[in-house]
Length: 546
Image (tube, rainbow, N blue to C red; front, side):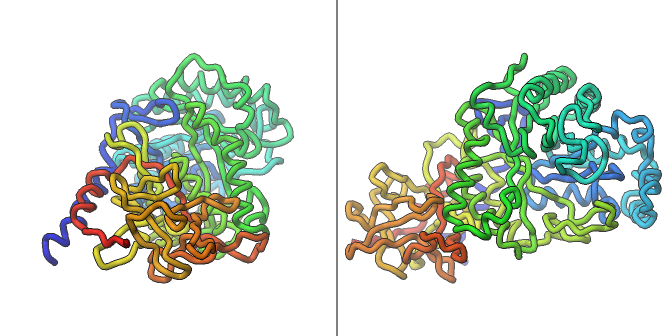
């Protein structure tokens, strides 16, 4: 390959590496952003790793060596683990004194004991809390940040409205015991630089929920954690299985410390029944995407970081409800540039709800922990692993990227002879979406134009006609529509070769069988990749329409 053709790809690779600069820990907050000690934005791109079930050991240590799992997390592009823990592991003497071997024997898991002895022999006779510390140390040694999540009190699968673990005052949720446990864990990891945050409690729920106790105890929990370990982020969850923080729009928490407070929400397709599969996806996305912003997204505008600490889908790709949800959720997550944690890392469980070796279909790893369950999903989520904007991401002015949620790709120009296509968002084209609704290549008079239904979208310099205007339409606001000279409306679309075309706008009626995801695009704000794209603009000449 000639050097002149290779140069853009070399530059793109160098720029990709620059998206993951070394972090200066500890972390703090700067308005809506999580930042490092130098004030540079750090985006949490996490995996949730379960360690709260009956055996109280991080899942998968019967399948692979601990260090192998930690390195696998890094290789998949994640920079953080949300590591769960049960309250009773540190507050109940009879449980806290158990070794890993004893815990597994008590649960009838003799085969798992043998497997752990093979893969992680140094852990088998450690007390459970020391095994938990060993997991944190392995992640830290591989430069993976850790968020400690108090998932439940009594070890077991979470969650239901009737499991007595849901809210302050429940049978297994003594607020004072909880404060003791938070203090012990925060103290234990004071000095562990890669432990960057603590989530106070997962998915508050159940009939005892009330705002007075939420404010009272969440504020006490936050103060207890901060007093024991002032270096870490303090993460507060909402009500109704952590789907509701709207009450904060009327009354904010009152704490003695600042620049360490983060809020978290969860979002799953099943939280809304079969709405995604049984409704028109445009209307459902518009409605439920709007609900997400009303229930917690507004906190970003108030100047607080919002951590989407759980979302996930059936990784087999066969669940229509999950698939449609994910297309919408990716658009929202990119638009808001959220910090997030995917449920889940684990491909299987030692024991879940009485079943040994249960498969986790939401697991990013397969049942045997040997590799990704769905490599295309892993490629797709990589688009959300790097920050689009924030302090220190770049020193350039804001521009726009045209993001395609169902693939995790962006609209790019490949070369002189090829049409606009979907490609990596790293180093993608810089656009300016103007008040006149044109999409211009940044710093030029060159704009995106519709050339006819079924034809490739093109670049041109005559940008004052209707075919050069792009209006977000439909309830989802993710159809980008333009009007042709004959008065017909077309939307951006993608053909079988990933080329950008225009065609009739799909799924605008109440038809629930129609899936518009191929035509969904999101114009998002960014400040990254400027050097690479400025150079590539000079490398590739443009074909202009007249």
